[in-house]
Image (cartoon, rainbow, N blue to C red; front, side, top):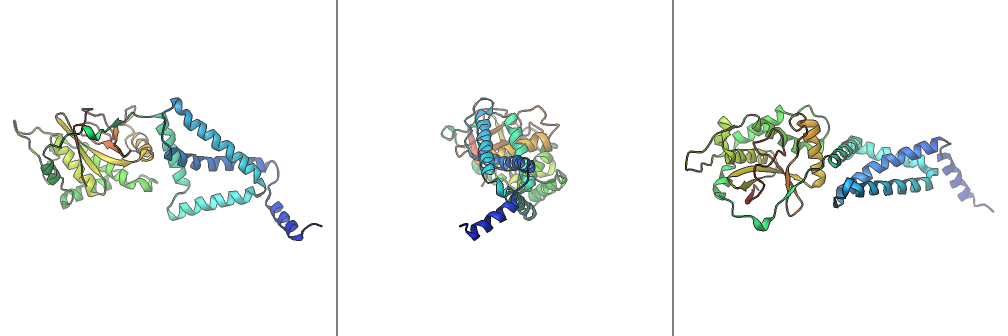
Length: 310
């Protein structure tokens, strides 16, 4: 004898089922909608084995696609309910400013672009680094708490990229790029006195935006630090330049996309992006005065010392 409770549940489930051919269309759409964010999360958290043509990522994508299709086909009687839940979760994330529809779109574009344009990083070998020259003087010169330096950096963030929509979670990075643009568009290279290593404080460089490479590195680091970024100064043979902490490799994908396709399209067109990866797998982007876009070429490849501004 049929159980009335079971029959009642079956009737309710049958009401949620979708007639053909709409069930196949919705099944395929839902597979794609779930596949994209799921693949992005897995892609960002897996170590890249650097297979040719990104075959590892292609295989992962195919496995996820097939698994999702089989799973959703198995539960297709409640497919409409699953679709509603999916849109509610992403819709809620969009409304409260968490992960939502726009984030999926931005992450997917960044990921695809980075896979197409894969730069070659330089690794920092800490054991090879030498003591940083004039360390105490340089640290003292990075006056990130100076009101004039802070005001200069804040003004730069209101001058560049203010009309950019989305990318809320990347605001600090974009503001740091605005500071880079303001400084490097105006910086005037001036040599030190003959036979003397003159180290200008950030507040001193503020007046004329002029000086040599170490003055630029100090001023850029102070401005980046004053708006919440984490800079460091790299010492090479006869040169110093600033770098900025981007984050992990997933953050690098976003940075590359923003530089080459959004913020510095003309300056970085067909150009390589240069950065370092330290022993903690953190990515540092080159901010030297020699380029008009973040991640410009290194003047000298060999790193002799590094000074992080904490």
